[in-house]
Amino acid sequence: MGIDPGEMHPVCMKNPKFSHIQRPVANVLREELPARVDWLLLDMNVEPRISLYSIDRLASRMTESLLGVFLTVKLNQWSFADQIPNWVEHVQAMGMVRAKAKQLSSNRQEIMIYGLTQKGVRRQSMVRSSAK
Ligand SMILES: C[S@@+](CC[C@H](N)C(=O)[O-])C[C@H]1O[C@@H](n2cnc3c(N)ncnc32)[C@H](O)[C@@H]1O
Image (cartoon, rainbow, N blue to C red):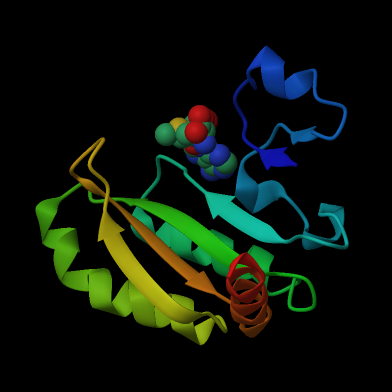
């Protein structure tokens, strides 16, 4: 499922497993989301505090199934960089462990904040041990 007021690429729309909510994320009720969500990815060209608030609001419904979150944050102003530790703490407070921030090379004024839930950590351990 994708949430975006814009158009989706035809490749996405042709996929029978994909559905599109064509509205701003703030207008989406948590009840409209699938009962089971494994991963939450967010990449909106909005202010960082709006991105964080949005992911927080949506993830709070997904405590059973969620494995982790990936959040792209635009540093529209370089002064926003001072707040990166607070944003990582915010993601940890959402129940994510091993939360980290990485600068994205494709657009240097952009970072990825990511974290796994406890369930995501257990899955990572299973995948790693089965690969040995
Ligand atoms: C950098 S693009 C990323 C698009 C897509 N994730 C991709 O990888 O191709 C940012 C997207 O955020 C969407 N966007 C902006 N404001 C939004 C909002 N309030 N709610 C949901 N999506 C929003 C825009 O329509 C745009 O498609």
